[in-house]
Length: 283
Length: 340
Image 1 (cartoon, rainbow over the protein chains, first blue to last red):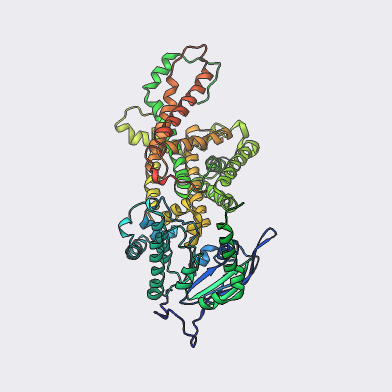
Image 2 (tube, one colour):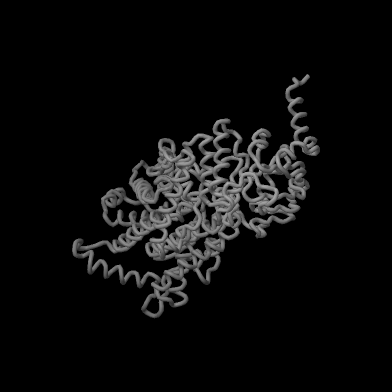
């Protein structure tokens, strides 16, 4: 299940390229007449932290939704860990090891923090109704393990003391951490984070990034995350995928992408122009 | 329950029945029956976040299937019970498969429609259900075949052999009272157990945010179907008790009002708490029945007006409770959530 591969492979060496964990090929998602994702093709290599950037409306979140099964794509293919998952239900994809978080955190506010965590554990026989009657001992045994795993992760994220509090009482930043910790409980091979740094203070944002590095090293988790902050993207990711108008216009290492002319035109240029326009008082 | 405006009930009688044990046993049976109905709603609405307004349909299917199997197909009463439960659960799954994919509010609308379809079917399939005439005993020669016969025999022997030891002349409905509340006890214990398991945890996650549950690998439709099927099972059992209590079945006994009374019970007792449901049901029915004894001069307070006044008073009490304790008597304010 959780194969701990190439620990410590932070920057993949060009001599021995790591295998592709996620391959998105020519994915199309239309809403009425609008092609939100218009033939997007990209790869995520195992063991990397890959950033997905692009101007607003580029189709990043829509692509996330298609890849994780929350939207049904109109065309294309999504291969995860060697298996075709295009068109599968979200829960099937999540069980294969591709787990996502949401732009607006979905901490389950009316449940205690520890229940949020334990919910995500895979292989709990007690989630099948018949096992509650047929195998109550197995359920209890697994529940003990799950609780220990959950507490261990909560310790890492400095949330252990809040374990019995309702998640609704947590601060916005703590909820982001909880959502990341909870996603990890599901033992993902690939974690898709939709704007994990949005709406939290820079200090906590830095901690979140450190966690990502640490988890990649220690647990071999691969990350794909959507982010707007260019500095974060350039300094903390191994690969950068750039989307514009529903298509992937660049896919490479941060320095390459930074120098790519089409990226500067479509994204950086756009941002620069917006900023200038925004700073000028309207007359 | 039904009030005929033509008859004038002397006040003395109403006073007597206020202290009448038999009267309160009847109230207890109704309260227990509604507890079972509302326990299903608690599982659906309080713990899974699916607003089921069609519980009366599951009661109707339980009661009618049992009665029809006994009266028209010659089944034994005891065999008809599990079959009727399965029929209600199957119906829940069939209805749930398309409708549970809807958003919570649309699902609620779909369930009212489903319940009305069932009731109107019972009203019009006269050959099977007796329609508005009702479904009651068949007389064959000098013996009458009732769906209640087997139960009556057991009930009488409970009274003769057990109850008579401590109550010389027991009420005929007392065994039903016992069985209803025994069922309530078992259901509360079982449901509370299930709620504390990983399975129950998934339900609560769905209640709050179905997408979060799906993103964590939970097949949410399956859980919602299970929740609805268990609720249908409880509805069918409540339907049996209603049928045994009434001794005849009419489609009007399964109006949407039944479901809404059960929802009042649920809200009174508090969301996301099974024990509260029992207390809510007792309180609701004691208030509703005790208001029978309100005496006001006639005219202007005719009996029909008084009957309406009873509901108004019960409603006011509910509004008052909502104002001062919106989470109900036993509910947790932190867990007040209904799915979007």
